[in-house]
Length: 188
Image 1 (spheres, rainbow, N blue to C red):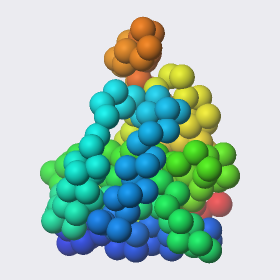
Image 2 (tube, rainbow, N blue to C red; image 1 turned 90 degrees about the vertical axis):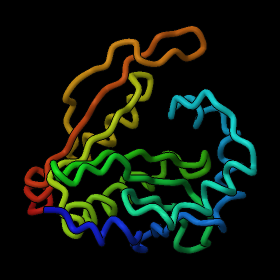
Image 3 (tube, rainbow, N blue to C red; image 1 turned 60 degrees about the vertical axis):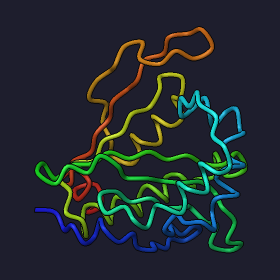
């Protein structure tokens, strides 16, 4: 059984180099700016462009959501916005949820993603009580897939040619992690 209160109120989670803070209006400018990074758009399969007003409204509405968790990833030392991580599709009946992460260009390849994922997983498995967490990653992003595998995720399937990007059809790789696998990995 999941702890709905642990989903309804997004906590601040602090790691060694980053902290996950509830995404809010104060992050709107940085989120909006990050949407102009072509590589980030490609890696997340985002075709659509957003207006500043849409991003302002989105960031302002996150505290009202009681069925998902939306965090801004901030640099502990500078407070700078490093990206975002969201847990969506929380299925209380099956104790499962999915997540997505995106990092701004200057924070990619620095180990920030794995730290953010580990903070999130600890909250999801220990506080929320999820049994399973899954994600999707595009086949043209093997670096992310390797990072997820290091965190304990395993490939569970492939959605063939599910993304059309610049005229090329790209597969989506489905990955999952069970609480028991995560606990076994942490006990080493």
